[in-house]
Amino acid sequence: MSSDRSIPPSSPRSWRPRTLAVRGGLARTGFHETSEALFMTSGYVYDSAEEAEQSFDGTLDRMVYSRFKNPTVAMFEERLAAIEGAQACRATASGMAAVHAALMCQVKAGDRVVAAKALFGSCHWIINDLMTRFGIEAVFVDGTDLGQWAQALSKPTACVFIETPSNPTLEIIDIPAVAELTHKAGGRLVVDNVFATPIFQNPLALGADVVVYSATKHIDGQGRCLGGAILADQAFCADVLGPYLRHTGPALSPFNAWLLLKGLETLDLRMERHCANALKVARMLERHPKVARVLYPGLESHPQHALAARQMRGWGSIVAIDLKGGKAAAYGLLNGLETIDISNNLGDAKSLMTHPWTTTHQRLSPEDKLSMGIGEGMLRLSVGLEDGDDLVEDLEQALAD
Ligand SMILES: Cc1ncc(COP(=O)(O)O)c(C=O)c1O
Image (cartoon, rainbow, N blue to C red; front, side, top):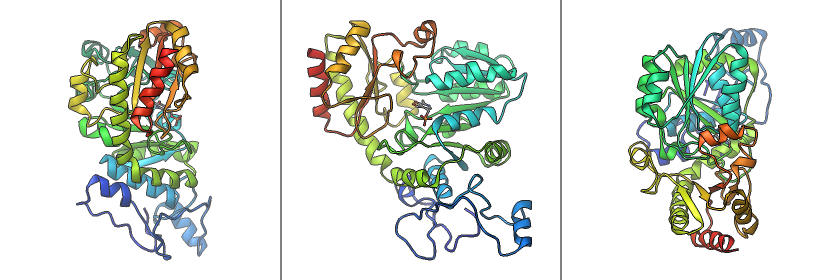
């Protein structure tokens, strides 16, 4: 944050991630408040015309307008950057605003973008439908096949986009290997780290250039607000992303930044419970006769389990299943749930289940869905913070109906 705070932030380099999650970026005002101050202000005032001029010509580093910078949003950015181990972070109004800005700020007509096929529906739309309108070539590969990456990245490429684990098929992509190929092709690797969270995976440390989050998910973690974030080095955030955000304005509300700051304080604790519950539920589902396949990176049966163990420190909260009875069986399970809610959101304290074919991925063609590995019998479960045994019992009774 800039020089206009009354008390400078205290983020000793020696703090460990759990301390950074609670104290990182904290900038107290002259009132010495315990909790982070919420600055609901769109603008700022100047003592003189000269000060206003110097604030705009860059001589003074201070708050000018909340579309550019806000003290509460800056605290959230600093805290998340500290946890992620990134030089810089810029917050956005939603996860999709983050994905959109992280990609569009760095490309121009004639560029080439390569992405994994298995993506959240809106991420796929940005690359396949939006970027191609502006003369950008979009190439999709099977993210788990390094041969396909090598082939696609044998030509100059501006940017590569992956989700790992992917939504909803939980594919794991080899971040160091794809980063190396991306850099050889002259591009930047952008990783959507929503499913792993900064607690379980740090893509920048694995060779990626940019990390994006939907903070709506686990970072808030309580289903209260939308938010997003982009993390990268200082040069990218200041020179490439900074002007794009400043002039297009997908700014995070200070109120949401305040909620997200409080969310970061408990993220580590919550991810431990999410993960323990998800593993318990996944093991039960794996034994169930009506379930054809369970996808969870923590299961030994997951096709990229060994890779997940190499690059992640935990398996996450999301479990996907394929039911033997197709769409009818999937709807039967959803409609039989008593504790778990039917919802397309994820990363909430409450367990939520959705049918990707007809909700999050509805707009994709059947061919695109099938090529991503999404079938009509697939359900995605975001495992919450309830007692894991209650979740197991709810799924057992819904499957028995
Ligand atoms: C992997 C992934 N990326 C991005 C988003 C978009 O986030 P938001 O809803 O905050 O815009 C989502 C939302 O589900 C997601 O699952």
